[in-house]
Image (spheres, rainbow, N blue to C red):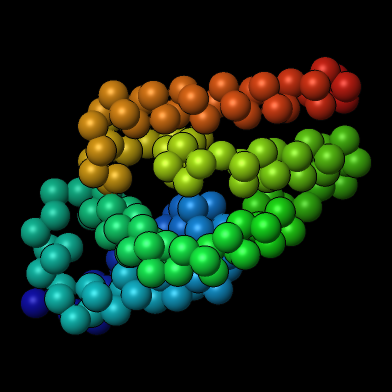
Length: 169
């Protein structure tokens, strides 16, 4: 049985990364907070879940991803509304440079336009620095699927952001 201190240590070590991943995936801060709470409530109720995991972070990412997928399935009509509101979310720290702020805003919008499965893989690769094997394990998808989702997502981002990059370069 895990002690509350161990659960607290897991939270301290992984909550920020889980929050960023879930926010990028759900595109809704309230849903992200609810999902993060659900992840740690499940761990508090069943601490053996993480005790049996080879890689705690991969396990937590998989659990968070699965909970997010379940939530999306339960709320398909509500999700459409959240996607339209996602353009207003700021994923990046505000910038003092107008060009950098414009690029970040366009990047956030471009990320929001990616299909959720591609957006999840791109986030884990770029912001969490996970390998494709780790991403595949966390999202429970084949390695080649993780790599192809990343490639397709990056191609879409590159195509959308190239004109802006050329303009501010």
